[in-house]
Length: 359
Image 1 (tube, rainbow, N blue to C red):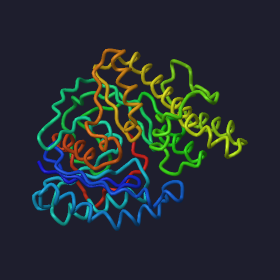
Image 2 (image 1 turned 180 degrees about the horizontal axis):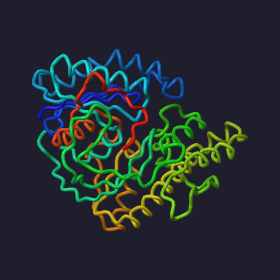
Image 3 (image 1 turned 120 degrees about the horizontal axis):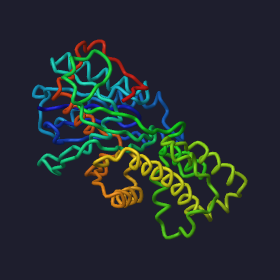
Image 4 (image 1 turned 90 degrees about the vertical axis):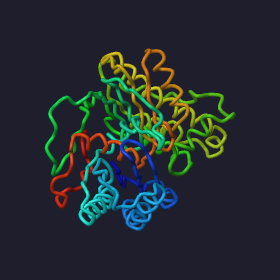
């Protein structure tokens, strides 16, 4: 089954071509340069960039995969969650192509893609992974932070869908952020430090530099310490960080830049791992899945693997770093599993974006 996947949930214009769950091409056109001077994503700019780039990106993905669009059997697209004005570009293009070339269409939840990308393979069919379910997934990015219990869906096949998203897997969100996402907290801290946008990668580089000698420079709170609560909260952490350094002269901030970056990163990761471990202890999964843009952080990946070893569970992360951040290959993998259950959009013209789509 040849799948053309499209992803435009925020500020990356993405397209990929898959043969079943094997990635033949995965093209990402980043808009970082367009938004960096504004300190964050500007919706109107994102929409225009998506409109300008969507077809060239799709054509590049097809060319790299050496697949003609006539040979595509299924078109997949992210319908949410995400930035509405950006999602609309991808959804409209997917509908246009599906109708023009008479292809089946599958609607995919963005977060589902971040989890199921762990099942992806390269064009040679590797890595071969046998993931045991139920699995406990942690998705961490600038837009969402969730702990999700993933089970095999044993119900009968779903009928064709007009709206909404179902899956070959059942999902139960057992913990999520009550305010800011983890990546958003890091980005906002970076902005306070004058590090620009996106801030996460800069925070990571500074945190791992030789200049770091104190990862607890500030007294930041450990949010939601109740062990019965699996949700996250990062807004208080960000606010405390701001108030503790707001009166510092620029020279002091500059002198302590690496330590400040390491301090906020350590505080965010401490909460991520603490709540995830509590969820593991409560739900006793057979495996762990992790994904999302923040999972590209090497320090977090090391600590997640260490946690998995402590609880004696296999852990799966995307086999390539670029599969952590927003990409269309993850949407294609999710679509492959949905296609196996014939979860196609029945009335293509009526499919719409869903910026707050739930799992």
